[in-house]
Amino acid sequence: MTHKAFKSRAKNWNCLVLLALFLPVWPGSAALAADEPDLIFRRSTVFKWVTPNDKLATYGIDDPEIEGVACHFTVPEKGGLKGWLGVAEEVSDISLACRQTGAIHFKGKMEQGDDMFRQRRSLFFKKMQIVRGCDPKRNVLVYMVYSDRLIEGSPKNSTSSVPIMPWGTAETAVEKCGEFIH
Image (cartoon, rainbow, N blue to C red; front, side):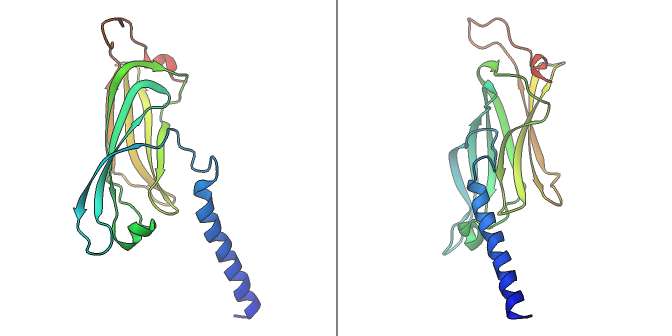
């Protein structure tokens, strides 16, 4: 390989690395449907002598489009040197529980399977998504969490249902989720 060809490849590689580092902070590039989740707690699962331990982390997040619904999910977080540097690819084992936390009010129309939240689970190719839908027959909101990759996704998933119920003594009528689906 000539010096000129080597320099050209090195320049291309440097551009890719800079792009990979810059894209996650570019406005709108990681388009989260909801705000960042709140860390509730972490528990170590695998002890490491020098580097951070592997952990399970539980987070809470409010649905940004539907008032009165919150979800909690638990994700594994890799420790070790790769986890410490932020380049470890996280596994797809994610659990999910969503509940009604107040009177439910829809902020607008939505599509079945809309993203409620999404988060990168590896440096480049893997992301976790929480999507929502509506079962109009039962007036139930349905949330599903799964992870996917650019080439191959994971069949591992978790589902949680939130029946829309009256909240408090003053509320007698409940909104119907089917009226807010396109």
